[in-house]
Image 1 (cartoon, rainbow, N blue to C red):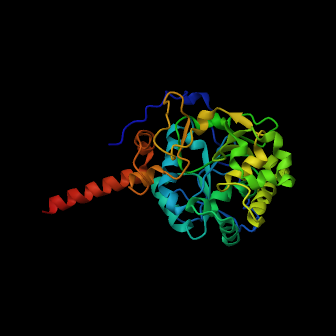
Image 2: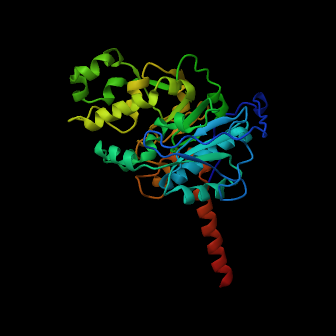
Image 3: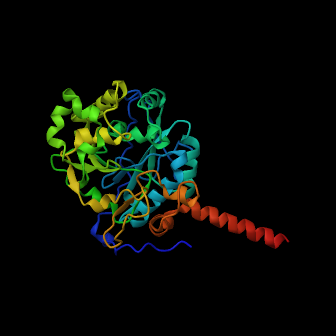
Amino acid sequence: AVGTIPIRVLSNASLFNCSVPLTHPPAPLPKQSVWGWNTRARFASQNSNSHVAPPPIRVCSPNLVHLALSLESHYLRGLVAAVNSIITNAACPEALFFHFPVLDQDEKSAVASLLSYFPSLAFRTYLIDTYNLTTSIRAMGYRRGDLESPLNYARIYLPHMLPKCVKRCIYLDTDMVVVDRIELLWRTKLEKFVIASPEFCEFKFQRYFTEAFWQNRSLSKPFDRKRDACYFNPGVMLFDTARWRSHDITHQLLHWMDVQKSGKERIYRLGSLPPFLLVFSANLKPVDRQWNLHDLGCGCNVKVDPSKAKLLHWSCAGKPWRRLEGKSGKVCSNDRLYWLPYDLVGQRTIREATEKSNSSVSIR
């Protein structure tokens, strides 16, 4: 049975400005071909699966909270739960605007599915041609399917995809649920920094890089002082789009991907995370670590304090929907308590199965 999440009482919605003018002109589409990614922004209509009419909220309207998550067919169940959690706990759900990078071949079916759960969602999709990037990712030798996904790298390009009127954006992985007001993270003052994200000082920078990296002094010498820097997970981050572009962050990240791809030995483990550590470790605005209670996908031993949790993140291979489907290890109590209540896909499946069963009984 689906229960109610025992999370703390949320702050009063009246403390937030929910006024969103709807008359602001639409933003122009991003330019074509951003570093090999052929991006095209499209609108999703409120009442139709077509892409002709814009949503009721214009992307450049003031007071919007902008969020970016990848829209991927085999992660759709996770994405729907993530979006549901954000909307459910937001102080101003009508002020949320979503940005979804999506693979060209997935776009039609994924958008149709998304609209079937959220018919009034304000969002744009960004179609991505991934041939060149997919080839590069495979050349890095990753064996786990999630690490090979081109959309795992979409955050690298996001500040160049988004309309210029979007000054800041929250990027979130799709294997998480938000259980507090997302506006609280949005209000974070970045000060001089490009991004804000929780830091975890029990995990050190140096553990994510190979001996080949540390022995190559031409690569590692500038990072000697960062060996004990705190780890952060770029699955949750608030970023300033203009500063990202002015600091040439995308090219810095791509540089380390190229080093990993072209070298005789791998310089880091995992997928898209280590380049972010190389660029941003000890150079970000720290936020409350409860905004990324991660590693819930690594096993069943992660303790959750429901009075403090803000965002629960199933990083690692154990995704809650896969566990519930019997495809990835045993189901954890955290999956049932904190993810399942937002699982609209699973709830619909159960409802349809029940209706079908009842229909069969009535026919008899």
